[in-house]
Length: 314
Image 1 (cartoon, rainbow, N blue to C red):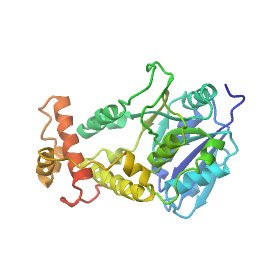
Image 2: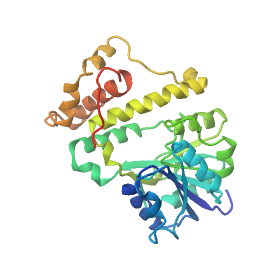
Image 3: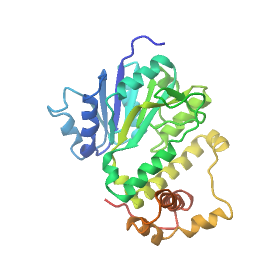
Image 4: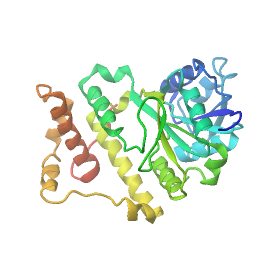
């Protein structure tokens, strides 16, 4: 058990004026108020600085404004400025549940010197269209982690495989710097990198069901945009494997072999992506339909990203 814990919430943001207000408002409603909130504005040009320095938030948050350097660098800057003994990371497109801070604090009282990633779900906005429903299905499938002994009654469960999501994550400040924080060279996959390094250093990583936050970034609720996001993540993982050969040795990049590769290449065509965007498959049962979407998105986003050219949808 740990003694008194002070909680510093760190939020990196880049041109997130339209969404960060939801994140900050959710922190105002916490059962256990954070001891400080630090927002690192990563070179934004959309008026985020003016918003956070207005009377609405000026007394509520500590604002750091820097040139654009990426989320990893922004989080590290926030961590260095933090005065709390516990660092809680939240992204600007997340909405924290009322017990979010309390759940993170409670975990670290019971499991000191560990890392903890909280549960994420899509917000109600995602339920307004077909692809949003798929995103909810997809996230629930992604979060079927392998745990060591325990059940999901709200306690923290140790993960078998290293994983964290930096959008809902906490770690004691001294442990964060012992692990050298996030890698500033990475613009993506920096949380996976930190999880791998923590695991290699024999630090325990837990998943907590009570530390719930909702993803409110509806821009991703589009087949095209999610494929492009997968491509960005794949490039980041390729860079990560170059910077950290340990990852390639232990988690090599997977490419499907024959005959699976024929199926994935077959769906690498504009028609398949358009079929999702135009909701051609709604007559199929949810589980079958969403598995088809997953195959199409994985093929075009991860396995064969160079076959179909796409532009981001706004």
